[in-house]
Image (tube, rainbow, N blue to C red):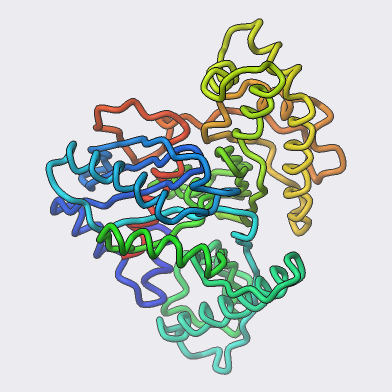
Length: 404
């Protein structure tokens, strides 16, 4: 049993419930509602998570803004097409659904809290751990709402979206599961992520209109993290995960398998496409094709055109990384995913020695594309070849498995 399962046991959840259901053939649907495309995956669980259907549907202009739903009816129409395509491939309706949510106000962080136990000789129970977890989540929510109010100048309601245990120590000793241990002091590190209620309400409306049972909403950088660790219980992944979507760039910092925090900012692949179209007098479709071209002369042309955008984008990444001041050192590896990862200039600007000046880097990070086929514990059995742009949706399948 891995750390996440033990934590779920500690707070009284039935982690095996969904795995048993999926083994009996129940389908789970993951919906990545992106700025440019809807990506949908459906999976069952055998020996490993197996994707049996996949779909990709183009979004209409104006449906999304900075990674968040802007036109509910427009998004419903696009999601319905994706759901129907999944149904056509599987021959049945996948009702249980996980949906991703993104945007600059969707944030997550890992907090370390020390809990002094009134009776050191008493053994730790599930009820006691649940009390500790609830206290940490409440403190994190209050802090997140204060930060959102400061950033926006308005009172904004947030809701807890994702929560995951990073580590537990009892009197200074690290344990996998605290249940039945004794001790006077429990130190827990818990990742919590929150999203604005207005964004969550839009997702819930979409699910309701399409008669989907919303079993979980996942922050998209957390979903990328879940995809990257999959069913790997070794807990040794240490990396900065950068997912470049159409409207946002999402960051998750992972240390020894635990997520330290997640952030987003509103610059994504669409801004590069628009700049190429504007400066070279191309349609958006032709600009997109040029952007992802691997021809040498095309790469050089694109880099010249989007140089100003790259400077803004890289500065945004650096600003996000500066917020992880509590870490001694940032990871020395960057894993790129999302549709924007196919732009060669993105990798090149991160490979540049000037990237990260002033950041807590022990050495300049190596930069790699996180390929779908390299994800642990998940297999693609669908007819569609899945690239790095489907990684977020794959992570949502894991969130769904964790949630029930």
